[in-house]
Length: 416
Image 1 (cartoon, rainbow, N blue to C red):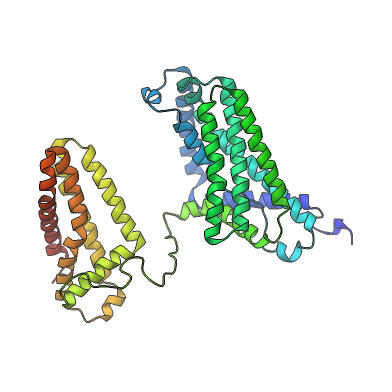
Image 2 (image 1 turned 135 degrees about the vertical axis):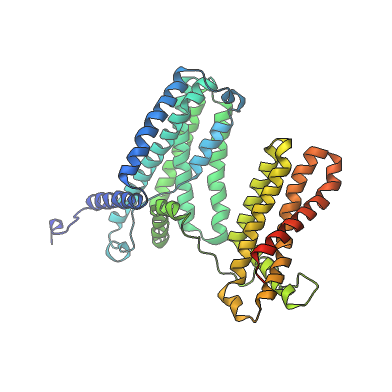
């Protein structure tokens, strides 16, 4: 049977078909979240405004804050960009049945997939670098030759990191994977940052470093083509990279699946929190444990605490107490909503708690859950305003304010 009788007689044609399907898949994912007409209303004005702003960076005086920032910030930002992303090889699960006997076909698809991924990486790095180029040349006085040499070194470093990270991901699992992945990513990035800082005015040394990164990337390509027994890991990593756009768009819509835990990470022995053994006290302790054991709720509590502390610290002294009261009221409202959700759960409905008991348990739980936030916010107000006296005042002020506001919310939100 001749090759012409197959739909894809060569590996090259099969790769082109998969690449086209990959582009269509990514475009379909984007279309599900954004309408093209809406994008036009955003892209066209944004492009014009961004182009005008970029023109001003080259032809007008740079903002004053540019000179206040150290040059080290730019290589660090580029290194973070280099460390993100992965490889798309365009392998599929069905290849295990239909292409495993054609080693040359698999090799061709893997090689072309790596070349495609490296080209995409280079374009991404170049796009970001062009945006930063006015700051590099005009803000920090880097010569044009050194700036282009730095771009070449950034692209070569990104190729090196992508290939080394991919080899580790498809060969290692579990804890050993991170033991190999961390040095595979951090060592090239550290060399890149050091070379960019010390040789920013020496394009020849930057190009020599670029050649070293390119040599490591070429060795990694050869090593990757020689790997055996990693097909399923290749497919898994490939699928993960193809779904990155979908995962990014769904991050705010769907919660990340929580790992199965045989024991909680806190209160592992389920020890009692309150001395009282009354049913209301046990109900209160269960709510506090539920707040701390749920990663989403506990993370939100910490995030709101961090934002609240920053807000209290940056506002003028006249407004600190007002912001303090508003933040405690907002946190009390959220914690009372959490209590209503917890006490109204179907599982809790199995227990014979009356409405009076639920209200009393909520009135006990709300001040306890609010107290850490109230004390931290009180410290953020008292210490800048009163100095050493603030160390004495923030605990009683935060405790009284937290208890009073929590009691107020308990009175009108928890029906008895």
